[in-house]
Image (tube, rainbow, N blue to C red; front, side, top):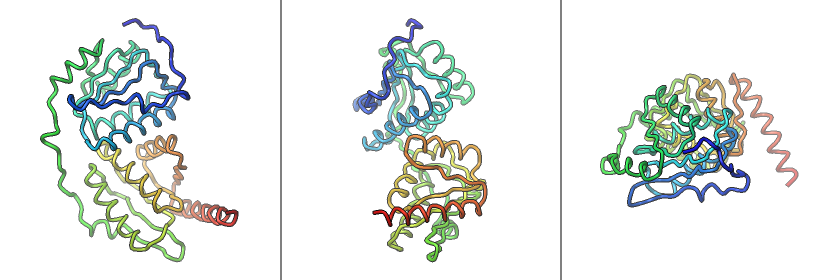
Length: 287
């Protein structure tokens, strides 16, 4: 393959969902980055949001990933987001990822990431060779991983409280670890059930002090959090998030149209909630 970048497509004119194809017989999801420009983290996050959404709609959590990098251009400003979102997606849904027709610059970056994060780069010069590699990989669908629960409802109950006077739901994720999707679903099922009992929406106040959301849990965590916010939040404010957690929250906020509202302390977070309360009342008054 030549190093010429070729014509790079105008992102604004692309419906990226048409570049995501599922090959059921091969248990393969093909993502077509050909002639596409990943110019910044916003573009990267929008693309990965679509990929995660399409996988959810497929009804099947595990796929081989076939990635077409032909004439794809990835700017340096996009690489961190591409790496973080790609890693989370692979850990959540990939049975094995194979890439083909990457430029020399992209190959070098992928290989550096592979060496750092200990994964097989699986880089091939053409699609046929990449598909042959996928055919050699073992399927994980017959042995789906079913995680045992790490927590009980008692663990969740002491971490959730409601201030009815101030309409604040206080969620304490401090020193809590989401190891995988089972932990996420168990905790969020509990939160959703308690909210349904109140039959109203709430401001969400979330303590992230020393909270760990492991890469294997991130895709599910983002999905459940987004769904809960849409259904039941008047506004969410987060505080004391560690650098890794804050970085992931801010990445997803770029493409999903919400303000991360991350503050250093609880007092600062409560101040922000009062500001949001004024904003909500003003919106109601103008409607």
